[in-house]
Figure 1: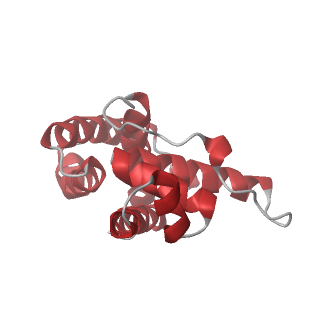
Figure 2: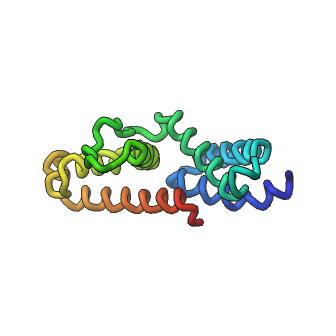
Length: 163
């Protein structure tokens, strides 16, 4: 077990670093959650369900995201899922739920300013309208939305398994 914990330490640390948004205390908490999840992954892994690396990575990521959701006070201004734009008819229920889960995870990573800017952008459809809605300078909204997009890309990479 020590060998597996050692082998997957870089994964736990990298994921905690990405999800902590520069907060060293949050990174430490997420790292602990990651190690606990890794321990559970070792105990509950079944070969017939797929590869261990993919299973371990998913367990670690899910534990960290769950921690962020449970501790919303540290990750303020989580969007309500009802505020999401309407989905197209051909989108399946599973895909809609995945998108809502992704956005929920994303908003857990954003700063309050990024959350407000992205929410205004999604509801208005443009940076100009979002800036008007928030009564903020255009550049402030544009930069906040750009940072949110970068975090969304990181989260998407984690979902796809890219390290």
